[in-house]
Image (tube, rainbow, N blue to C red; front, side, top):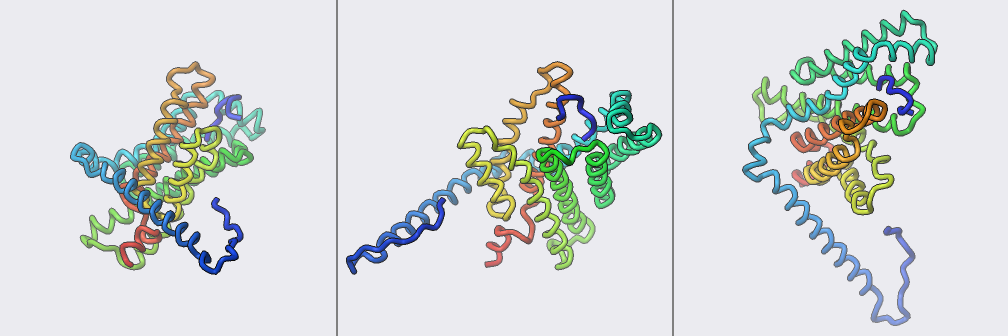
Length: 306
């Protein structure tokens, strides 16, 4: 978000063919439907085995702490960016003043306000205080920094920051559920709150998977397949528990192995740290989806009804 130095820069439906013989008109299509049904059932069983891992007694010990861990992951990038602005103050001021040609007074005020607001907003998210205002503050910081630093020209930056905003929306959606259960003492949301929560979680799910559009480039075919399958499942709200687990594992593995900034010197460490904490934000959003569920506007919820 802030200045990072010079390193920041088929099945397609085909036509059906029929035999001339009147006795073989639809045997092929029946067999195809049978194979598709068998594959779908195998996928359901595989997904169920993955989801059952969360019911293991060892995993259950950490379940109560999942929301707190997820929220910390989501706001860690804002803490890191605030600390960067303050610790590299001369570089930040110089970049905006001389390279971006903003008045020095504006630059100083902008950096001070953004650094303080990101600290305050991230802390409010962690403490579950005024979640609506905290989410709005952090989203405003992302957008304003994008314009001031001139970063909206890069597709990767735009998609990645949309995913960060998606994580914030899921956090806000989760806070609506928690507030109703804690203070309303009701097991179910009212219809109005249910619709609001559903739309917020839907928007958050769609935004959070945008980062994976560029993530799959250059990866193995298995990683590409699992990532695409997981992102589609998250977006439409189908098998979200399974998809969240798969995407969390994939992103965590690549984040630790590729963005291990602690092993590099100053120049490269700067940019890798940026990607590491932004990926951590997305992992936090996926953990909240795993904990909260997909919401009312999803295939998983419709299956419960029908």
